[in-house]
Image (cartoon, rainbow, N blue to C red):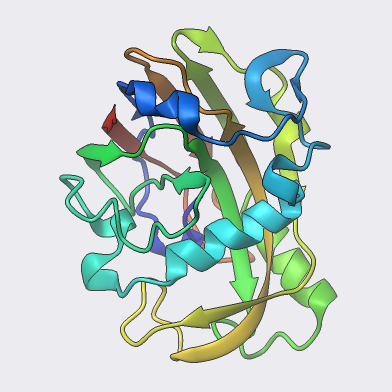
Length: 239
């Protein structure tokens, strides 16, 4: 779920989430959209949560991820102090992984929010890759950097099945890099393309919850990346 150029080699990725949801959730407006029939509580890739398609939501996730400078970006946060950065969507709360290492974060989030994260993925933009001139070239770059060799996601101990079913490719989309951004790209507006695994959970019920995912990605000589993985734990307090 993080740019391949930023990943160090040989780190295992797991992701754990604990949540407590307050009664305020019952007053939240939750659209009636189909959950995946093979994974209850997970939005189906052909659903349109809150009126947007999965590619739309992948674009929104990337815009959120790159919107914060590296110094305060949630990806670089090893405690959870920055998990609320730019969480401006009224319906969805975004989670992210880490550049490297084993990280534990503790974050409060509002009740009634759906939870969106990309346990693996890659994007390529014109700003980061000035030698690429066309959308097909960007797409090939994004796919080449997202060659996952193993990936697992579970919610409250229940494994999410058929993760290949949740791979999302976006069309060309607009994004803006701030100064001193996470990927070291020139600041300003650009366009990019993403290839990613997207996990989109419906708002969780009252109580404690655990989300776990791990992924290992093999290196690609064309993109200059080595083998890598992450290890991230979130303790969420939903209230």
